Amino acid sequence: MKQEYKFLKKHLIELKSTIENLEGTQWSLSFPVFLFNRSWFKLQKVSLYELAKELQPDNSQEAPELIQYQKLLDQGREPLFAIQECWHEFGIEDFYRSLRKTSEWNLKGNNGWTFKKYAELLIGYRKKIENTELSIPIIILGRNRKEDHQLEWVDEEFISELTIVD
Image (cartoon, rainbow, N blue to C red; front, side, top):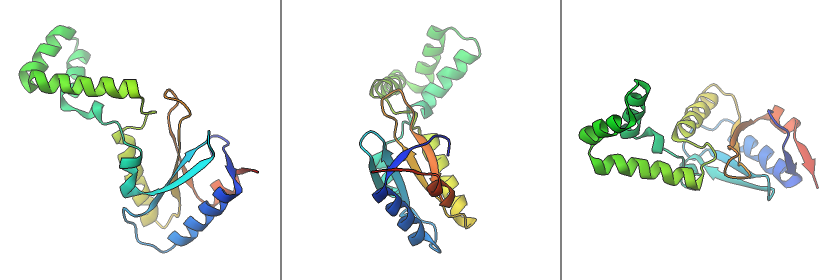
């Protein structure tokens, strides 16, 4: 465990029972993911299917307009010329829509929860289950907009290292 987190006894019971219930189950989008809000000691269990709704990933940086713009900047193009090229290739409206979405996510804050991380969680989870490695993802939610969410995997070792508070 990267960091020591404190849990309540009822959380420990929920974590253990969820792992026991998954034993021998075939992987699906109904598999659970835990969300843990440390500030309120709230442990929430959602399915993989519900996760994208509950913890919406920021995919604004995946927009082809912004990828191309960043690529042009990396090649040494002046920002104004890079913008003009993107306007020509994608259209002014689409380019500015992508910029606006990125700006909104930056203001709102996403705690580092990107579409790439979401996809990695799905792929990693499936691999673990298919390799009969029984562990469940738990996302430790950031306490403020600047603190990233942390992904941990609940297994027997994780449970044995938990700090339980009353």
